[in-house]
Image 1 (spheres, rainbow, N blue to C red):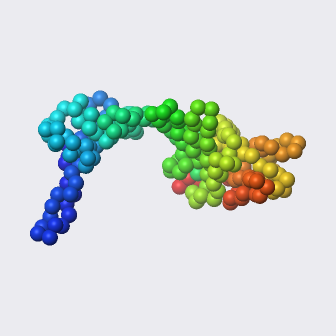
Image 2: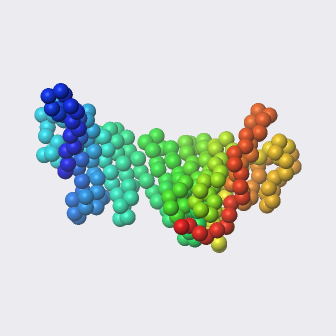
Image 3: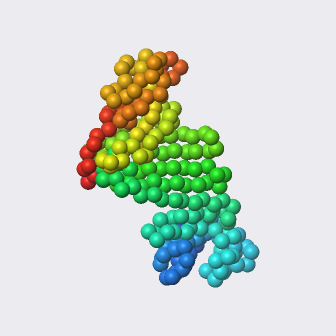
Length: 237
């Protein structure tokens, strides 16, 4: 347990400005690990506890939970699996999936699914050093997808925003360590021929292939972000 006090000068010395309280997991505790952060009680809820005649350092978890800004649970790898905010008012869960893909900046290694209080899901694919490859927000039948790509030195070289990405395939090219393949909406009448490896239906429309950049026609004009073909490098320094 820790109580953190922020002080400010008041002309005659230092005066307490804010007080926050932190509670940590003890050894053998369920849902956590030794010294893992468990509860955070911010300035305002800490003040409410005192107003209610409670001493935060002495109260049991069941009482602290009613005031805490944040409560956390973890898995065996010390990753957050559940977060509760605002004294129990909002709850989030987190699930993790690891791939067996080889390590490269354009190969996904961890898929994280955050389920939010309203039932929507935030899905994120990251590479071997935690850089984001795909982000998707799914709410009912609606979804918004963003993709990014990196060169062999791990530098971001392109970004496709939700207006350009229709879907993705996280099992693409799995035998060799698999990128996340994006399926994008490209108007070839605006930007010329599609890149090699893409299939182009008659009259344009959805394009698929080993390409992560995007070209998107919007209201008769072409929206262009940096476009470079994704590399097959296994170098993930």
